[in-house]
Image (tube, rainbow, N blue to C red):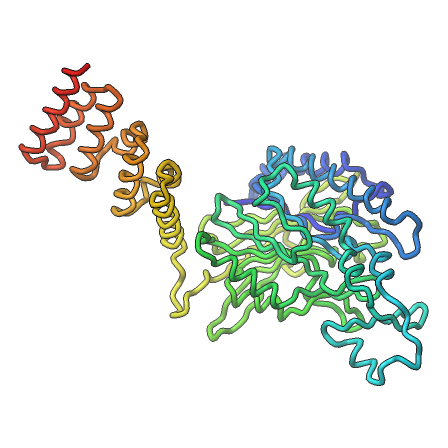
Length: 488
């Protein structure tokens, strides 16, 4: 299995009642317990943080930018230690998305100005609740606002992006999220799992609490997911906002956006925001049923007044099966003395875990996508491009780890690349049991290049009969060995 530590709603700040050391210690102590439970839980291979990294700053507070930076320093210290304790410091296996608490309300408010009553649109009610509206209503002041400075408004996540850039600085530039990007693709489990990390805070600010991901962003990310060179066996999505809520609330995301993900081959979605754990399948019919497992993590350390009634602080461990067609979601809850133990899923009859299953993505003809074949085709294409581009050693490096599963034309490509790169050691390693006479010839030549005449002669004698080596070729190979001995 591949295991993901799913945490959300960290609400980190210097004023929080639980320190970083307490949290990390509690998570480690829980890991030491759950690896021995029934069923045992695999230690995490990756970490997802589905938003609300910090607590945030209220409207009108002085020095709000400095206070936000302080909160993000606390969050960064926590996540750095978490990465070191759980992932040997590999930050490329930590996926982070923003939440509504990561938005600077004061920056957003500064981009707005009040609208005089006589300038308010006649159809204000319809406009206020229309998608993409730039009008905002302040219920406290009973006042209408309009976003006028769009550049200022776009900077309401600047502190979050400063934190992200600093946290991921040790990674190669190609792996780091691009500042201001609405989505970023992460590769986990040696490239078998692709994770689309979405910003679900489109249009969210001090007066608008809804969650949203532009449909264009979902579509563009899907195209990037299936671009040449990528062949994920599981497509996942991570965002912040919940996808359902009561009629008197608006702080959730349209579930139709999730249906759009399902139809594009996403099979597992992780989010937070609602401060309670939940795991459920969601379907879309296109025309047959396609399913996505959708998992909400509870709040890792929200204040007591922010938790739903009867709900403890929580996190989840998501174990993905080796065939990438199911997952087991374990809920962990802070029950006593700020320590975690087994939690409960109310929609699963009070169990501490749930099993979610889904169908693999289909191609346009309705057949299951053979991702393994797609990955091999991508690998061979990349290796051939490298070889033709004069980068034979790069081609060898791509193919050698997968030699045991390569088709015949893939092996031929490898031997051609290794010969062009004069990588005699790789040729000898790859031809330990030559599959064709051509591979045996390449092995003998490579051994001779390495000065191993005895080994070359042994290869002819050992493998010649099994490959039905013709007498003329066998004689030619022995002569090469004799000539090499004579020169040495």
